[in-house]
Length: 193
Image 1 (cartoon, rainbow, N blue to C red):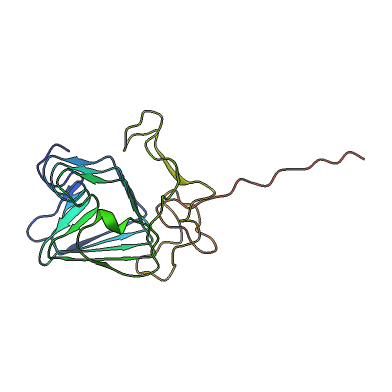
Image 2 (image 1 turned 120 degrees about the horizontal axis):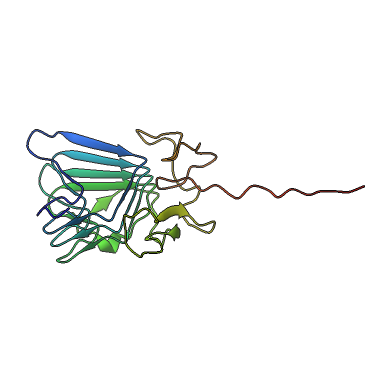
């Protein structure tokens, strides 16, 4: 988006809150603040992958002011950028929390409360595809088999879905992000007698 604020969504007066479940938000751009969305009220992300978004000013994802809040559960926030600071969430005077999520706290000025979080590379298969452009059809945000996000989410968070973005069942301990890791099927052994 070329708008001055909110590359993906702009929540204005009258918005009391939004919830996003099982979504990939990637490759959005704002010329001003808020590379992903301009918040108003409470926003929740559950099992989302938010990567490669850019803000021309503050908040690669969003900048929070009084009355704004963001909650990130079972989500992966990685590789976002902001020209003036706050590559992920810029907590100015709002509140932010993350539980069972993977993000780098050094990329978010201000305080983000929560627990059971990780802060290492999520090891996506090919986050920006062969064209090296975030948010295009050739991106592959599935997790590699060695990803730290595998089996680290919680089924007890509000708005949890037992299926991932592609409708695949989440099994065992669910994975962080929008896409559940599925190991390759076992090989077949043929025995000739």
